[in-house]
Image 1: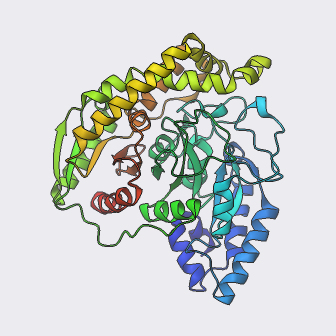
Image 2 (image 1 turned 45 degrees about the horizontal axis):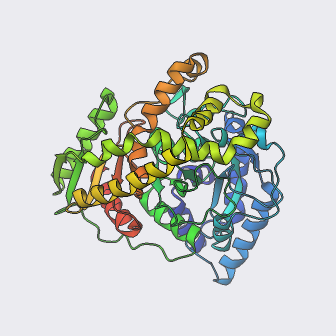
Image 3 (image 1 turned 180 degrees about the vertical axis):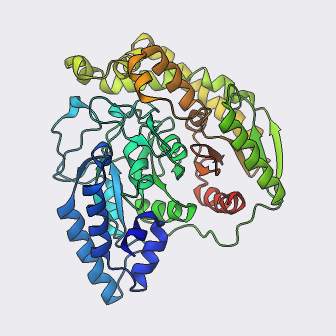
Length: 443
């Protein structure tokens, strides 16, 4: 029975804790044992926190016996990307630049999750300073894709995704600045939620681009995503009951999103649209010109803020960085402050145009990623290939970041191919209800 726990949704585990069928201590020990025994676990977890996990599990077990559970997920063990501050535990953001950095308090979202009863298993590997979508990190570790041991797993929340995909956590908590929750979720056949900027606290989260940084869960179901969002923000979860795709008007985005899409993701996207149409949804394919215009601003907006945030730290010790990541940061040095401010003014206008163009639709759909996970060795040996694949990996997800949207990636049934569902800013509850309906149609 305990091995079955490693592949179940966080919600189902939580319900069984509440019904007295699962002991949180046994559940946590099962996960810790699995991490200790799994051959790829050292490439997934930067470090575990067994003492903290056992203490939190014991407290959850006491609450369960007293009928005082704090949430549906009270007692469920999860992993945390190594950019969330954890009191007394090193938090290094996948970089030798931050080696030994040990905060004295938890990040706000970790504190909220602990208050909801979630059990912290440990910290997962990630792309260096979160500045790549591939999940390749020769400085620390590169978790493998669950569908291809020779391929990267997607980043930057690479360990967060693979901790779930390999059965080493019930869910993972990651961050998303240009696709870092959605890409690894898609490539490892998970559900990933990117939240609206500002929805979840960034206090105690190592920054990349503060105006784009968001926090979100990587998990097995939309229900898990809804419950985890509630735990992270300290609110009640969205009601997913009764959601239905019938009668929904959905836009399949053509602009940028369908350019140079590989065969497998393209076919998976078309098959998903067909299933939604069969379930009663109205699907229209169309263009939104603001998307293409916004994409032209991405090099100015992301690299400039990232380099401005990390310039002094990087240039004090540049040789310890993986060269393609270091040079990606340095790409922000070529733009002036005037360029950056003007780009933000332009993006604000384009966001208004995008929302006007999509206002008549319940959601916008696109392939989460245009490509399948690339081979890790080739990425290491060919810097030009690394750059080209990284930009294409993040292209579709970055649309949501530029437009300030929440989004959910859903497995399509084709390995490493996700369907991305996007709605307007601050509409997470609506997004989750619709995603739950789409999830049922796809399965």
